[in-house]
Image 1 (cartoon, helix red, strand yellow):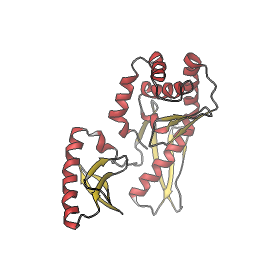
Image 2 (cartoon, helix red, strand yellow):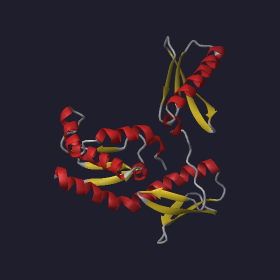
Image 3 (spheres, one colour):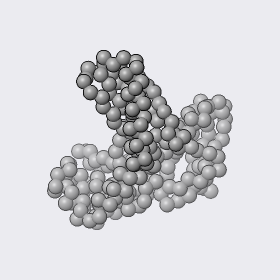
Length: 244
């Protein structure tokens, strides 16, 4: 049985999932979309409430030690006429409310992103839907540049066959390389510094030679980008802020 709860920290709503199961101990963890708390199934209501307050105190300490953990729960707000800085370019967001059921978006010659939204949608839902359509429209807009960047590094260092290259709004990883030689990159990387994006590209290209994370794989990455650990550290620290 899973129960839902939440608390507010620094004006950010943090969702909690409480799972009761056959176990003897209590366990807390910070996942990508929620704080998870595992409790013994025999706990009564008073014990659950007590653990909830202990969990909050634990989270407060963790957020203060590592603010990026809290960043993952922050909802991105999209406002009309605001600027969007992405892939070293600036765009102006224009939000238009219309009697419609879905959101759509396109980029005009003036580098305005025109987003059309239902006129009766709640603000929170609007932000979520705008994020989804922006991910798609910017992926389409920049995919040619991304493909050229991937092929540039492939020609320089790898000379491997690539079947396809895609941008997807992945939340669980920054990139992937399949046995069919397809490379997928998270569209969230469009917000990252170029050298960090290049690291993920090189990482996935290295998988065309070594489909694992063996010492041989990391030697390939290191040979192309000796300071790759700095890029990984940047993603660990700032990755939660890269979002649509």
